[in-house]
Image 1 (cartoon, one colour):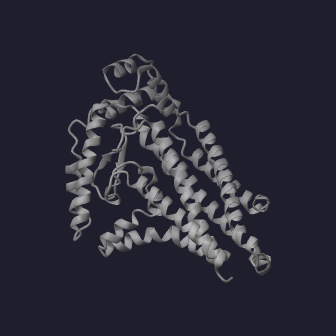
Image 2 (cartoon, helix red, strand yellow):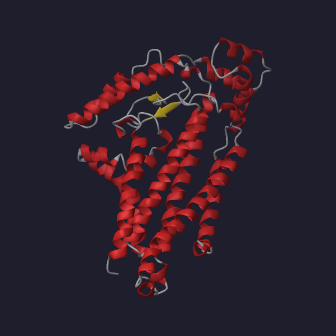
Image 3 (cartoon, helix red, strand yellow):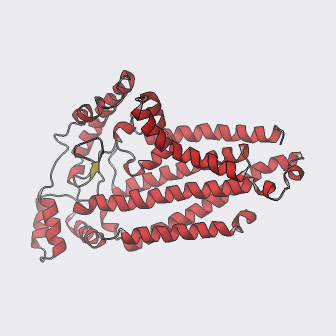
Length: 376
């Protein structure tokens, strides 16, 4: 741990990440005054677009923010009482994807039938009437999830890769491999190395998250919208495969703070999975250049494979690729929704993270056992 913490590159990387995150938050803060006003209004008039809410707005002194909020709410109303997720899926997904793979098409149909149950619950809870951040809802969601949390997740992946590879390549860099690994105790050092890398990675990533989120919440006043529902009628999802924006349909009834907490928790699981993957790679390939190449290929290749499998209509491979860590990260801002053609079973991102965690725990111990026995 001391050797890792004395690495100057670690602090340069963390400093660069914090500067990048601060700049990103600052440059995307154009709607913060309006969001703050919406939060103050919701705190008094409650988070539901109804007659009482509109009457309260009309009684307030005229100003640009109040006028904009009234304009945003003019067309707001119930959307889930007549929304049919099965029809949306059939019109725009069933017949467009997984052609020649009827079993996958059947899973897609069942997913949207299940989603209709969620829509009915959202309707009963009046999730669509939630104000959230009104016309700035998509902007707020992008800042929190598309930019900040996704960036932190990717930075965590890079940090884990760097420190874990560095840990396992120390002996090679100092030409001490033969001396260190000629004894049983020397071979068992791999467990100490991976434990040290895991602890330092966890501490550094936690620091990155805490400082970045403190910056986010100091720039944006989000306190007034934490209890809003993320499935608000103001929250739309743009899908390249659809000619229109669809509602942000979640599998469960999430408030903003619940969705934020659930996303953070799933990110922590994915970071733990990547620590296991990185440990397996580093133990099996204790060479810096080769290790970085394998890490990079593991992260980048699924993006190209999605296009490749889709163009060749290799739908089973396309579907299996949607379980990869990279594709999950790509759609991080849409977790716990239907995810269009990139999800065939409800809560696929959760199942995928759990499967990865189980598989790579087993593979990690197998890799360590192999390392302790093989010829070096």
